[in-house]
Image (cartoon, rainbow, N blue to C red; front, side, top):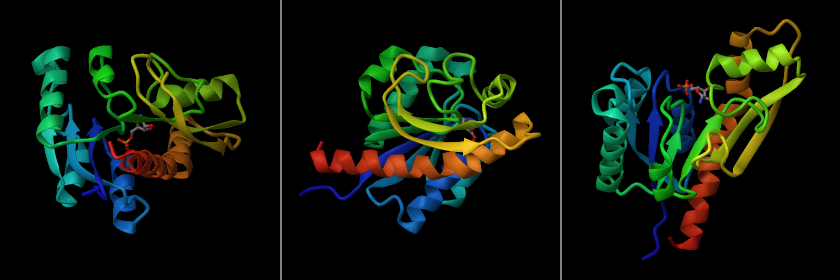
Length: 204
Ligand code: GRF
């Protein structure tokens, strides 16, 4: 029988506002082709884990400092297999995944990045640093990008982008909030629905 939903895992490290946007989008029906089954954090104290628990989603902590890169990736792989996960969303996950890992999930991992790729992306561009670089350059428009994840940091195929204007007197903090609210929280759920729906249509 054809499936009507794919299983989604969300990988997090911090506050989890993007995870919250996904949970809310699932509840409101914006996401209907995917179901969040598992939230994995590399930090035991990530507030994102509380958000998952409140939404009755299974959680796991996989610590890179305890297990090392290979051990962490092995444990994540085991969890994904055990929970029959089809799609992995990186939502503020602060660990780089190796090519060995990303190759196993070709076109099955998506990430949200807080700039319009190819600007202000790649190694070293994370968190506030992205917005600091945009302000330093003096660009008038920035935004967010959801893309597939491959072995090149922020280098995979682009799925969705949304532009955001930069008001005068912006700070990295104010710009981060603006980009999240106006772009990231909107395009991440839409991109997850798109990718999930394509997988269902292809019958994979
Ligand atoms: C977001 O800005 C996201 O683009 C970046 O990390 C931040 C995560 O925030 N990759 P949150 O944990 O979803 O609140």
